[in-house]
Image (cartoon, rainbow over all chains, first blue to last red; front, side):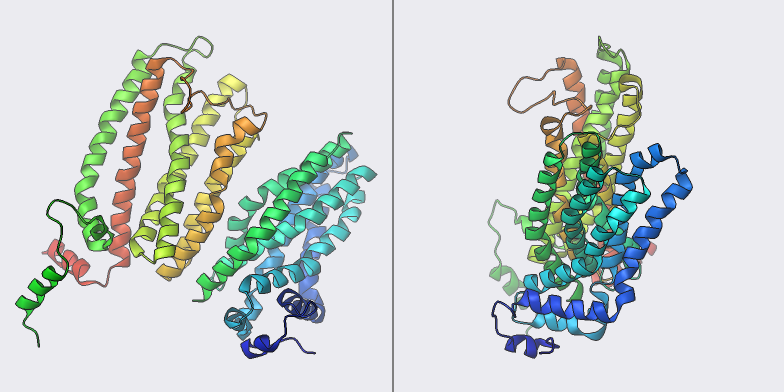
Length: 239
Length: 266
């Protein structure tokens, strides 16, 4: 069955467990991402290149690299996530399907959640999977790499959620791209602090349970709040 | 066609005002706000000048030197009021921005936009004076503890709000987008306030609380409160002045603004 293309087709979609609004929109976005693989993998490319520049700039001394690794990887993940959300709503707005989503009878919050989920699967999850490679490049210990990967696993959804809100607020603006960075990065600072802090704690031999608990709380809090804020932002931007 | 004289008297009969009360919502009209603000601004500047002079005099000339820090503590009379105002102005700005978004009133959003630069300046002042104070006392200009970090995030939130509202050309979309952003950032203000209680921070804990006696000498407290009132009056003076400018800018194609422009010229 083809994904719904306008409000009428959205209305005809039955709300069964498989065809719930979130999954419908997520499937559509994932299909589009698969067809435009380069667009989806560009943030990953940026992530690897940017993080890879640091050893070249700072020098190959392993002790220094091990020290800066958590921060560098996390900051590059943040920047890559901001890159990935910039175009989240742009193509839909361009061809008119975003307006159809606003007019659809399904709650906009769920449609937005579907888009964010697809965005995370296509751009955030690759960052998580690429992190061990960077961990090796920076000569991190195995527990450190594990903490980094787990932190990114629960942190990158937060980045996608907050980034979606920023993208919705700056929809269609001339300076939209740079503005998303300025608006969203301050909100992602707690995730950065606890994510990098978890790796530092583990590499120092301590438990990162507190850090992961706070990050889990941030994930829950953001999952509950950000789709609503993004839906409100879309209505502001398009009306 | 109704004769204008009877039409206006009928209009007054339709909306009678109670003899001794003011309908405050009349000042939600940009033209009436413009007039009222114009009359109030000089008074707020006067209050600012008087209280600032008193506060600085007591703080720098009369209050004794601190037994631990010597004279370097005196920056507290600028640092603390600026920090308090930075948080208060953000809350007020978010309040008016959300009010404007919820009730679709233009002036509330204009006032929120007027508050933002003042709040950003207070935040910057708090951070800057804090750094100047930290160097002789803590031995460092900056440390990434919870309070300093969250105050820095507050500065970024202010700058983000200003950037977003300036980047959008349509006034209504700019106001509502800014309101959403301000609302999302409100969660940062309690974090700043309670950070010294929740975390082990280099920044000291609360000396003044609403529920117990202050832990500082009363003459220092007096100077501090005088400076706080001065900064509060300054906020009003600046916000009202800026709001008047924003009103003129956004209402430029209305009759009363055009009349203002021509009478000023003539």
